[in-house]
Image (cartoon, each protein chain N blue to C red):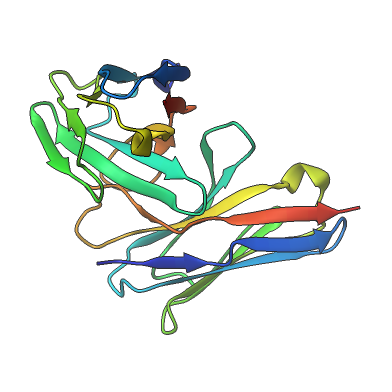
Length: 113
Length: 111
């Protein structure tokens, strides 16, 4: 079955850029997503990218997709304490996604002052 | 719009008890799903539904039942709770493509 892999932790200094990486195995993925989960809360969609795109930028967020290597990254510029959360990479397969998304285990982003 | 509403937010059960986690959405989405989230495991799909009257199993369905009698509601039933079912449960609704909308989660402890 499909698999999505992420590092469990990333520590960055406030003001630096954070880059969270993700790899996936399903070559027929249609959409790839980044979700953010703050402590005690549900998941909120940050951004997503269609599989025929290489890059998507939205304010401080930049998503890069290397479809050949099945690698997705999320860059957060000027990281702030409010960015501290768990970030989940997820992919939707080509089957229409009726069964939802396949999620990675999440990357805990830790902000150092 | 309320989006996706889950109740209860917190629940403590004893082993062997049964209960139902409720999920309701007001966005007229066709698809709904239940996930459980455990530390270091990410989100794992329990059951999903592609429309009223149609449900299917996800990755970890054992110990859980679902039904979808209306578009709006997708309850998750634990028939005989076990400590291994201690988790945070998330309900999501979505159309065929695009974003999944999540509820705030239901935190279940089984003693």
